[in-house]
Image (cartoon, rainbow, N blue to C red):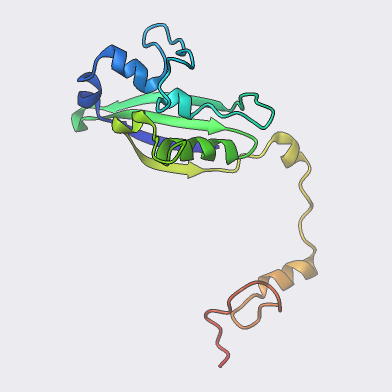
Length: 166
């Protein structure tokens, strides 16, 4: 699950025509209809967030947006949340937006919206939670608790930083 907060520059957005807003997004504003591929700009939000798999089929994620505003602070934006079996698809969408596809062809929505936070969470499926291993044995727990500096088992991958040994 990826959650982000974007702030919008509404005066800049409202300064452009509805037709230009539609080109930025890649959809009609009132009817919410996606533009045909031969009309939709390659740097539109929809174009850069449409990802196809090796089979040529569009890869789908579950996502939602919620607008918010703090009028007294002049702050308006969107909270965005995306769910997928793996973060790979959403991270590819973000790379397409911020780096571009190809690099340099960045998402026009970023001319008006600024990402201010972003977090990735692991949200396991119910089946995963139902099949968790049991708690460690007492002997295993005691060994796991004794990982003081200089007492880490060999080959644990640590750098030994902070060890009291000379």
